[in-house]
Image (cartoon, rainbow, N blue to C red; front, top):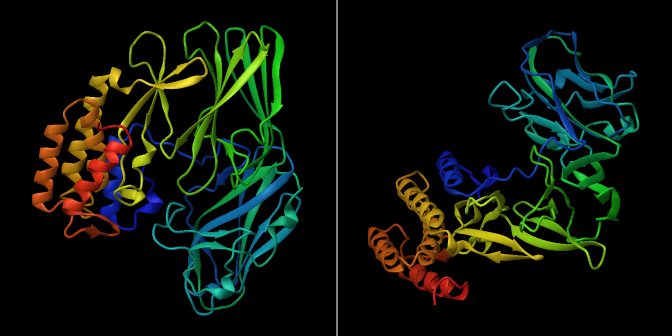
Length: 441
């Protein structure tokens, strides 16, 4: 899987788009689906008059005590040291974000004159202060006041960005501002199938989750009600339900035994890693649900009925290929298809050669696109392609293609390139890797 933050140039972003097409799925690991929500002013073009004051409010409809705040803005001004910028709560309490900072420099943010450009973000936990930097201010900064002073106040109401120009001589324009706000409330997500109903409860602050509990009711009786704080991810830096615009909990019969399983998708935290699932299966003998933990690494999964028999398989990728032959941003993974059987996941990828062949074809087409792009790093893509070819029994054709790529120079020159094996050394390592990972005999 690839993520935009790993790509430093336009050429690399084009590679990202191409690999996303070939990947099995793309997981969005952060969203506004939990208690933290982003409220935006939308596009503005508000004049900041010389020695004038501008107020622009955002109406927050959601009730609850504030537990986290961050403010983003994009504005142009010829001398930002003229400005005092504050956030004003609905009850009139205010916190200064920037008090005459920036010397003779220009602008908060850069690029597009919208919130999709490079914005200035104020957050109490930021390491950098405006006083430590020069305009244009881009990225994350600690405000001159503490936003935590507004925690505990009612979220519902009109929150105002106030900009006061206190010196004569220069003017500016506010283009947009946004407010990220968490509320100290109990959130819940629900799912059901037949006689089984599951509900997930949690509190959230700045995408950190606590007091997480799962309750399962079967045939009108509560069969499971426990905290999940230590299940599956006790040592993670933080973790959260995998909220990507959907409900992170699912009730579905995965093994077609007429007894629905409960699936909870989670994210451990970190730049690239890791997604995992708790699958709870009812045990008549124990009279409760037994929990299995299944790690997906960077790639995640999705449910697909490959056999078209009403029973879903879990489509994923082999996370062992990430970083093995190229940086994460240029890695790809071979397809893996799992079936849930009596509390375990069984690899059934070879049962679906048509799907494997389609995946291999997409990877090969991706290689052809990338090798002529501005960032022609193809070693990660070809490693995943070669694994797919082994699954299909077409490894001889695959090796012939890779040898042609080597002679063309696509695999790099010398024994290493950018810290990864290149040329003949790449082919030797790939053969060994495919053997140790079980693709090659």
